[in-house]
Image (cartoon, rainbow, N blue to C red; front, side):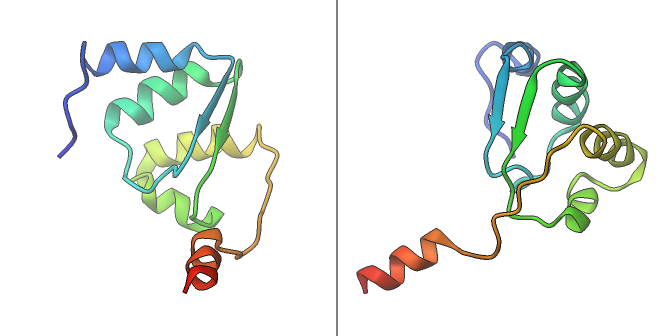
Length: 101
């Protein structure tokens, strides 16, 4: 269950849709809601820069977006306007935990 957003989800999404650069860290850790999939990504398409940071491979993202036509549309927008930066499998949290042990 999602926590309520002060002023409502619409206000929240409108606020974040206007930034010239939006970094979404841990993208797809939680499955995006219908409004997140529709409003935010649709409003950001083609204009400002959006950086998606995620642990999921490109193949796993479609399923995390709920599959279906909405996921197809979102992935289509992202894939055709993207510069991919793969950072490999190095896990900083794991490395830090091993170093402190």
